Length: 263
Ligand code: ADP
Image 1: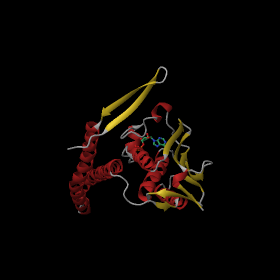
Image 2 (image 1 turned 90 degrees about the vertical axis):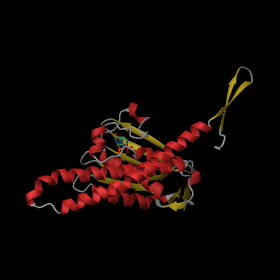
Image 3 (image 1 turned 90 degrees about the horizontal axis):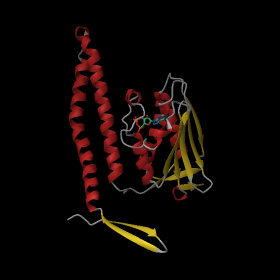
Image 4 (image 1 turned 135 degrees about the vertical axis):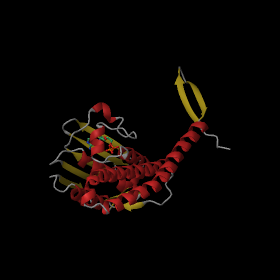
């Protein structure tokens, strides 16, 4: 039998009067768990046939000779789409894990400054020839307590987005700084396309895109910011987004003092 989950809320009215609401949300929780399990299983099941399709496409590609060269373009397109589908499955599996599996591994000290440099290097290799520049403003003495794989994937999604959504010659600034309250902030800024204000509150929803064709053309799955949001929630951190259309965007992950180690 499923556990009973109760939700408690209190409303004050008049002079010292209060009303207490008790709701049974077991069913809501159960349905949410079923939804997450379904996404997790489905992603897993899709991966096996896709691996076979990709494998055979590669074999066909290798055997194309000059007589069958008219098949080159369709085969390349099929390979690109298979790649897109694989990225989507990987992100879906990762997101469903972040949503449903509680943190089990113990936290480690994450050297954010070194990770930021690594990510910038990878991004600049990837964007070679596009004239992009990277600025790194990091404090090596500040470390973060958390899950390395999760934090790296979240931070990297922000760096990749800053590259994707800034034009050629764009500038991407990665910063990691201490805050006056003892916490610290990781942020990524770009001088790219920017985002209109009315989109901002919905950006972390799954598959929410400002410009679908631009996102798909740059290989986006539409799940990157949903992943960032969940990783931040698992690290007691907050994601804030500032953006102006045609000027650029700043995505900041603000960590509380309990997650920050100095020294
Ligand atoms: P995607 O795979 O489409 O990039 P994300 O969840 O990472 O998915 O981002 C959601 C949407 O937010 C993107 O489709 C894009 O429209 C917008 N976006 C994200 N980062 C930026 C950025 N740095 N500048 C402008 N728009 C951005």
